[in-house]
Amino acid sequence: MAITLKTLLNYKATQEKFSVLTAYDAAFTTIMNHVGIDAIMIGDSLGMVIQGHNTTVPVTISQMTYHVECVSRANEHALLIADLPFMSYATPKQALRNAAKLMQSGAHIIKVEGGEWLTSTIKKLSKCGIPVCAHIGLTPQSVNKLGGYFVQGKTPQDFDRLLNDAKLLEKAGANLLVVECVPSALGKVISDTLSIPTIGIGAGPDTDGQVLVSYDILGLSPGKPAKFVKNFMDNTSSIKNAIKAYHQAVKSKQFPGSEHGYHS
Ligand code: KIV
Image (cartoon, rainbow, N blue to C red; front, top):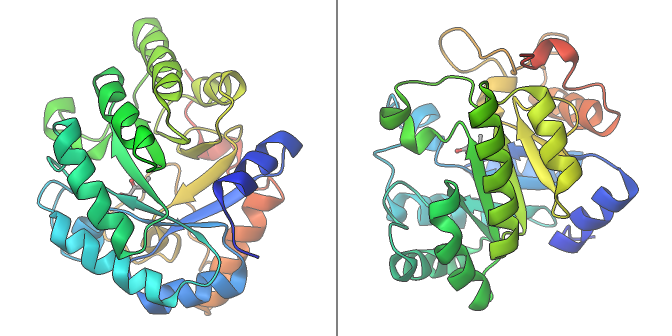
């Protein structure tokens, strides 16, 4: 059965965890469908893992629509969340135009990175019938402003600001919220406070769903992996089995463990 936003809300109500992975092509999408991954994120992380850039900043809307089409053609039942890339949603009008492109390419929900400044954009998209996944904490499109890929929400002021952003984004009409690279305690309080499902990446075990970059769980990304990454190829030589192990580990609350989280 197709996974929808309603399914994720039911998961939250019944405290069933849901699994999310990134995919950028048809082959991975097919495997993820067979394994039962709940939602697929066509992330602008493709700028780093596929295109070889140091950041997600160079990714364009036409590149995103191409990859959304590749995933969508193969997808049978996962919920498809697609990133609006850097500077494609600087104003509500621009966001609407580009979100329409992603939706018409096959996305079910679009994702935008940022806090309070996004409330008018989210209101506009929501009013026009476009579901929105907001993304706070470590927002990779702002890496040049943040000064690197660091844990966010560590000081009491930042903790409170991110919690407040989460509330404002939900109030503006966001349907989902990605929380990236924050102390586990913040992941928990945001997930407990909001009615919409949260998706954590380096935000501890208490978010409603978990997402990782698929290339990271397969040990394909160069360099030292982030603390929140687990290589699921460690005990298998099959990509399908590794993706299945990730799915089962999330559903059974075995992943992430305390060792994958940040503790202030
Ligand atoms: O771009 C991406 O793939 C993402 C997720 C990893 C959260 O934003």
